[in-house]
Length: 285
Ligand code: PXG
Picture 1 (cartoon, helix red, strand yellow):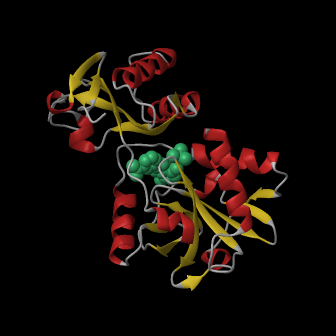
Picture 2: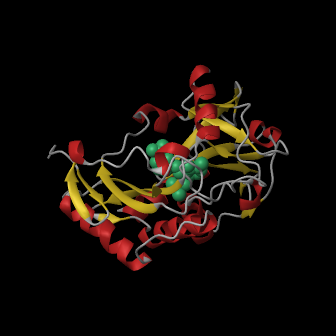
């Protein structure tokens, strides 16, 4: 079915062309708000509670009080999925500070809740089979003394600039470092490496988004008895890894076979990456 999406705004549904918020919304004026990107698999919202919890944590961190409860938000998302009759798709959940005056002061703003249910755009199939190439961006992820990277805020400019650097280098993703030069994550994905049969990923305090797919992969690794550790890493660790892959709601699990023009491991998606991809596929049904 290719009917136009029905968009939820503050409890009401609108056709895509009629779904509008004010140009005085501080989400638009200042990137003042938070969001989530969630998958629907087989009619079920994947890791629904985890995404809603992260949304409320992000909101709390930026002093934004969401005007409905987490349970009501879960209901609103379910209702929007139903309204759109979507079996497999993508949910973009946004809470903005809302419309106020033309100043930073948020006190006059009334938050807007927007839920979009649409299709997801995926990387080409060949990239999943052969692995992708990434480059290191010169733009760093958020400095910890600014907005914490754990907040999934509407301010994605660092990541967008890094993404543009990647695109200019002919890559679909770019590796972002933190202010100490350690590996943080990619622009919309977390990063893992495998070295000597051990799975490794940077800890949350490396300045990353605590990805829900990341946490799912960690759980799967534990179930599969794959040795795992969170550890800070440098680009050297990525270059010299046996395997490397990225995780995210959009990408799921995708192998990285080249970084900064260094071939990683065998130059093909590795066995532990494939094992985790299979386990992930089984999980989402
Ligand atoms: N790091 C960053 C900076 C992200 O934005 C992830 C990691 C992975 O987190 P999850 O919870 O999804 O495993 C993200 C998520 C898109 C899109 O349309 C981006 C994300 C998620 C869904 C869609 O580009 N980023």
